[in-house]
Amino acid sequence: MAKGIIYVMTTVVPGLIKLGKTGSDNFESRMYHLERNGYANVAGLKRKFAIEVDDYDEKEKLLDEIFSKSKVPNTELFALDVDLVIQLLSSFEGKQIYPEEKTKEEVFDEAVKELEVKSDSGFIPDGTYYLERTVKGFGKTRGTAIVEDGEFKVLKGSICAPVRPGFVPELRKNARIQNNVLLEDVVCSSPSSAGWLVIGRSNNGWTEWKDANGQVIDIFRNKSAQK
Image (cartoon, rainbow, N blue to C red; front, side, top):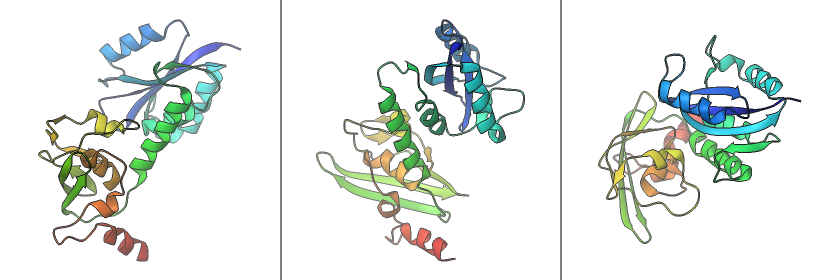
């Protein structure tokens, strides 16, 4: 049974990932090349997870079959949520190669939590929405967001609370926040991920965000469910 490494990388294009394989002795050089040179005219590749497994050729073929409908033809690029792939790869038997500072169990649990935050979606009308919440030890957070064509965007200038130790979504980790002020607009996958950005902790975004009349946006989800 040939051993090798299966890895997943994000790209500069949101929602587009690279899923590939390499020899056990070639991982660092392969990552170095891809992170500096890109792949198939796509730049900004960044390693997210890698695991050494037996029968890595067969496992890669299996992944190709599972995600075939999401694959960009003639490439190793897929239109997939990276956390969905990480959740699957971290369930394989094998030795985790990257990240080194976390266990497979920790990586799996974080991927599950990331997916939960992202999947909390539903219909919200175009408009401007607001979040205010007092966070213990910090004070009042204030978030402003706009929704256009289904895209939920938290606006720069929002006042964001510091995060606590423990799980923090990638969206919040990567946000540019200085002196508790959001420095640039951030597109969020759901109201709860937008809430994470501002509040700095787990929340139900459907009851945190309100319209200009002070009504929670959960009213829109309820109306949608009744149709």
